[in-house]
Image (cartoon, rainbow, N blue to C red):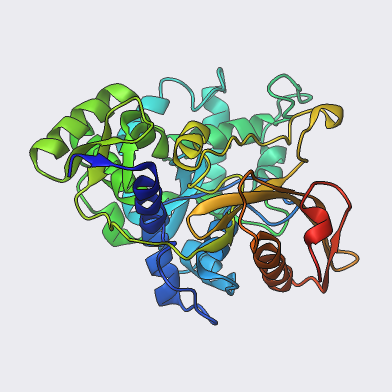
Length: 395
């Protein structure tokens, strides 16, 4: 096969992400593991207007599930997931820890992702405190650092010196994230108390082998994608991705294809399913792998999507926290959602149909909203009269 239609590529992508798999009334750890194998990583984000970002892709694929499955996988022994800068902040399979060592080494001379000038003595004190105390938050360690008042000088964040130092230690792998508190604060600990011993004992791959492994995993999760898609999944620069792709093509793991409407060369994973249909129904978080690379989303679905959280209210088109609605193999609508926990209500603040949305869009969306509300522990769904689809939603 040397070409795919847009619809074929879309179905390949959705199948690779787990949307061909059946939903279960009571997903088990086996279902969870299968779903995680599809996505590879779960982006973590602090926005909690509906549900934390890392919980949502699992719901979109499995349906209502016990979130304790994710807690067990990410915080209990034997740990299956650990947080790292894998896409951006994300939960990744713990066996990627050795693969990420080259990335950790790159961050060391840069003082982490963006911070500069965290004093060595701060780093030493923090590391010693964690070794002595065990898993700790930045707030719990701030008293050990005498750094004067905080400065608010980066993206509006007001990070203490302890927080900056811990972020550096985390980025270079001197500490690992043991979990989070109920207030979503990160708890840091020594890697040997977080990462399973057998994983820590594995040999560290060469930089070239590590980059190839990340591209291989990206290709598996994407099904089909361009160099840019493959680089974005684990946020790798395109030069090593290009080399890795060439090697994987030579080995037969990636197959060059052209996709209808795509200007650039695409690559199909040799094990990607080529389904004749996808029968999905899902609300997609703004941080879902299906939509997080917006250009790819537009090429696959003819769906223009931008998150408007950081857009001034008066300039928002669709709303604050807008989720695309996937029906079968098309994105047919979008809804601005909020979990009003005090009143036990899922608020649909606006609802919009895409051009050409099928006639059953409103009914299917309503059913999915009821399912989401139940999973979130909310008693009802209330729809505001905003958007062309809102009047059609009935509960």
